[in-house]
Every structure is written in structure tokens, then in C-alpha cells.
Image (cartoon, rainbow, N blue to C red; front, top):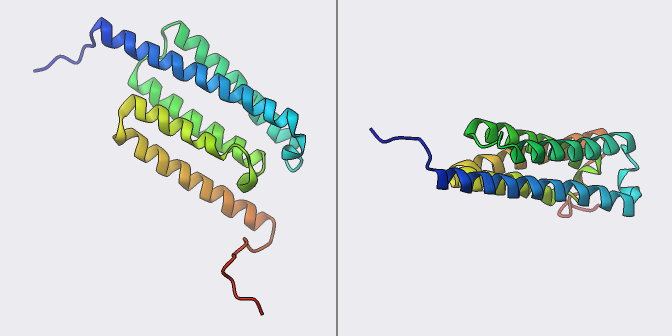
Length: 158
């Protein structure tokens, strides 16, 4: 029976990968706040919710970086929890900063990339599908809330 114990070299690579991901998450959080500071009209619809989502994402990013620097975030189950939190937070940011018109749509690629680094294709495909489903749900929800039909450029004009 093969041993599942990781070598010190593998453990070192996993830790370096998680540190890079944590720093990238923190950079995304800082960039998101800077974008909103430069263009505050992006949060006009849900201003308080936007401030909360961006601020809490920044705090979460600092916490994740802290724990990974303390060598507490190397297991597969912790990676699954963090990927789930990334998806939820990004959906929250997308919803609160404008839904379909948000400048943060591309942030959905972050959990897909990190899942790919952690688990390869078998991890990145489900994460990508979940991100697309959440985005579609946000789009439908905001269109229904506006009580207007979503724009259809192929609709017949009478």
C-alpha cells in the first residue's frame, strides 16, 4: 500500500503555493477597494453592502495570509473551505457592487485558478461551474428586482 505522507519537499511546495495564493487574494482585496475609491458611483445602489463586502473581504484576506504564514493552512479540507469562502465572498462583492455591471466579474477566475493549483482539472471545473451558476443567479435576481426585462438585443421591435 502506498504511503500518503508528503515529503518535506512536497510540504514546502504546498506551503509556498498557499502563501502565493494568500498574497494574491490580499492584492485583489486592496485593488477592489482602490477601484471603488476611484469610482464611488459603482457602489451607489448598495453602498453600505458594498463597503461591508469589500471591507470583510480585506479582513478575511489578512486572516488567511496570517494563518498560512503560521503554517496552519496546508491540508486539503482547509483548501476546500477557503475555496468555498472565496466563491461566496466574490459573489457577495459582485452582487453588492453592481451585479452584471460590476468591474469585479473577473474575480470569479481567482477561485478557479486556486482550485486548479490545489486539485487540477477535477477541482477547477466544478468551481468554475459553481461560479457561473452563482453569477447567473445574481443576474436573474437583479433583473427580477428591477422589474424589467433583461435586455435582449435580438428581440423583435414593433
